[in-house]
Image 1: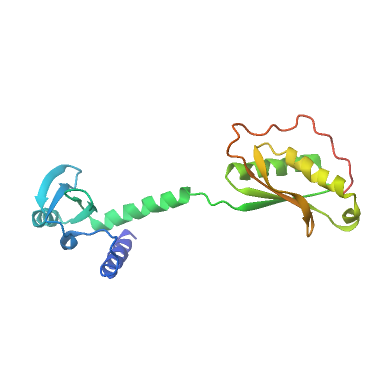
Image 2 (image 1 turned 135 degrees about the vertical axis):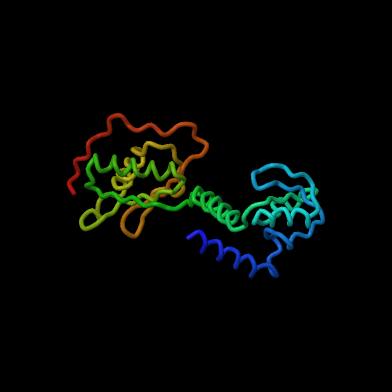
Length: 208
């Protein structure tokens, strides 16, 4: 597996030599006449002529890799190029995996959603906020509920919002939506502590 990866990386490197100016130079591609060389075991070999450094690397069956081209003189390291690219690729993948992409998550409640279900949904919304996501909350209406008092329906959604145990700010206030009422919230980065969850919310008795 590693051998196949090594061959693929070397082939890609060779194919981009003529077009990519921001690349890692190895062996005879290195243009600087002198280099500060780091040995295969991490030891400092001092400043060497590039030709001499290449010979040292070749005698070890390794490559001379220019790792800091802008230094004076440039810095090069003796190691296997395939291993170098493999390790660099792993570091880049690990860095990308740590970057969180912000999304708009959705949570839906109904007029008859029970208190426990409301709390669970509110907790999930808090988790999404903590991860940096926006949360769109929708009060879904169907049948006879569409004709209910608008102020009551808004209050129902606002009550759910108050149950979310995390500091947030309103991105879009409660408004009419195609399927009922909706609002969007996002994390309040300036808040020092999470919003306090109501201690004793009233039990909802409206039938589903």
